[in-house]
Structure formats: C-alpha cells, structure tokens
Length: 126
Image 1: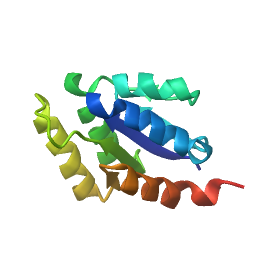
Image 2: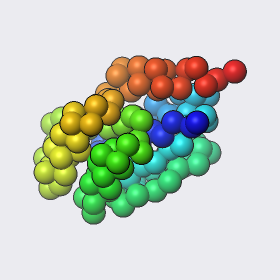
Image 3: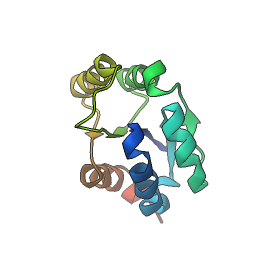
Image 4: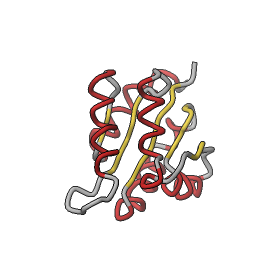
C-alpha cells in the first residue's frame, strides 16, 4: 500500500522544498503526495503528481492536520521559517500538536525530512 507524505513550506522555504523533492524523487515516486496549495504548485514542477489542499494561511495546514488525525497521512515534512512571523501560527501549532498526539512523524528541516522519506519509502523501491 502506498504511503502518503504531506509537504508544507513557508514562502522563504519553497525553493528549498523543491530542491529537497528533486533530491528524493526516486523514493517519492512511490508515495502519494499531498501539499498545501502554493507549496504543491511548486512541487508539481518536479513532474510528481501532488494533491493540492488550500494554502496554509487559508486552512491548508488544518486540512493536513485533520488527515493526520484520521490516520490518512504517514509523515509530514514542513519546512518552517523559524525566524518569520506567521498569521496562521495557531494552525501551525495545532498541526504539530496533532502529530504528537497521533504519533505522526513530522520533519521541520531537510535532515529529518530525509530520515522520514527513507524510513517510510525505502522498502518500497525495487
């Protein structure tokens, strides 16, 4: 069964997310990818299919958190801007709380993102 990976990136981190996806494209081809709207639009440039949710500030973080609570997401990679202020900070905190509550792996940087992808998808590649 395919694993589902959610991708989220703050505006200043979107190019980093695209580079990250390209670096892991061979594994991510074997996953269902969902993403917040704008992040997903960037990730689609890699040629991978991406199911788009709303943009983060418009409720996309909350949509992904709901899927995580329902057991429909196997891992979340969220490249956050740790120095920026975000109007939707309560949604971000809620997403992190849901991941902790439901034991969903959450990466906030490329190093842990790589570990999540490798851990969830490595066995699926022939």
